[in-house]
Length: 249
Image 1: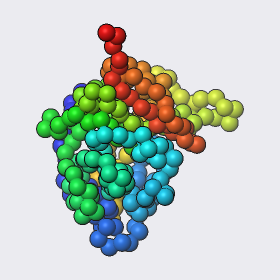
Image 2: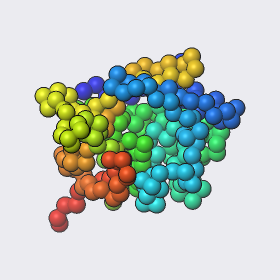
Image 3: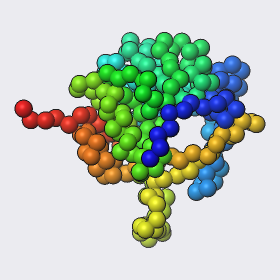
Image 4: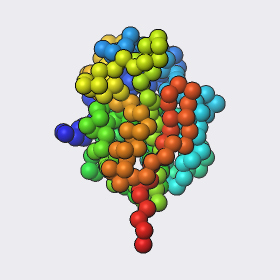
């Protein structure tokens, strides 16, 4: 597997453009999300600026569980990092979008870095690593999940934790009788392709991974991590806590 350590060019960064535009103008425009598997969807940009009053329960649970020096991966507009900073948590926000990082700095987030999670220049020693809004998506495909988990584990301090959420997309393939219309010989059903557009800014297609909990748990064990569900949502989504496996003395 080839590991991508790049950041985004502004001309290929519709989400970053949307975030910085909303911060600058205050106009609640929409970000178009396209996929070969689903109908086009419109994401309100103001949702990326949500406060704790409008965050879903899984995100609130993750913020409640956050402790110590924290890394917010794929921080976007910085809603989680900002909420934690306001609580006195030492948090570093990273994103591959220079435009998003500029927006976070303008919002007053103290420690922002435009860097890829896999960039070897990213230092470790974090007590909590947050990977929210389907954090498993960064893996792209099932073949990348193990590498993602090993990389994140390498950034943990002793006794640290990873808080990551995802969804089981099997419900998408349920037929009227409750059976599953899935080709078991094909790709994993949680592998999705996406592309985004904001005005004239169109991003490149990218792969995004949704993982059912048993597969996440198995991949975590292979990466040397304990894994447990700490909260479940109303729509096949869940929040998991991963930590380095304990060894007997």
